[in-house]
Image 1 (spheres, rainbow, N blue to C red):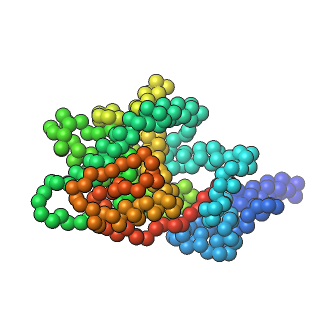
Image 2: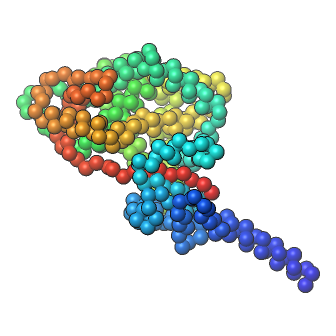
Image 3: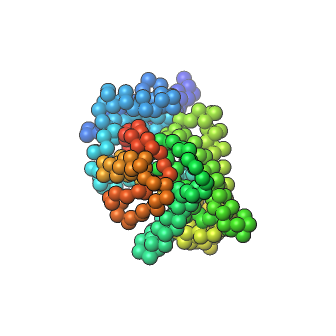
Length: 360
């Protein structure tokens, strides 16, 4: 009996520890949003989220309201479904909501890279130098040139009536801004490598298009990657896409191009001086790449931007093909920003919104 007692106590402690890790003892605290752990210990609503995340969130919103916490594969995520509630949450003190801790965990899981304080300081320095003042003017000029290449390359290139290529407004806008942003940051194919400037520009269009669709595929898996609820098949696909994008954005290939932005080259040089391996630089480059088109979806959600884009889309149907693209530094000024775009201006808008914070 004296021997069995310590064993039983040890088993009991182990059992309690396992239950704790499974989240069985997690309770809703005062002033916290509703907590829903689901019926399966540890997994919670992981399977439901993996199968149809939008339907699950709608169901939880109907059940608990605009703010709620659910368990997904061992983690507790708080979702905010009302976009008007984002600002008060973001402005909370770090003692209540530390985004850095969450961000570091997500970055490590999604990009296989562990961010350091040096990375943050270096990013701030490069952003101040190249995304403000004279640096921003140069980048804006490069962006305009790449937009011209992507949008006007076939204007005046043939005779007779041209066939319209129709696309959803959001997809078209995302495609153009992503690709132009990528070429602006990571540079262009050298003309001498392709024997002529026209062939080099054609390569830029084809190469950026290929990257865009690979990026979109990974983007569709991205929420499930964050929440760690990928199926085995999707996990294999996510890993394949991640390595493919690493190859697209590799430092070695980037340095062979022309017109690389200082924002990228300075960061690469900085990490090289600090002895960061090349394969790890490829990973952190992927980490920075979501900013290529970050804000496109945000801008299209806002009425001022949305009305302008719809106005532009409608004007395309009656605009002459030989008109020049007008650009403006004032995003609120109406103008013909899209020349070779979709005639379907009133496409379906993605109005779903959610934010989250995660914890063990």
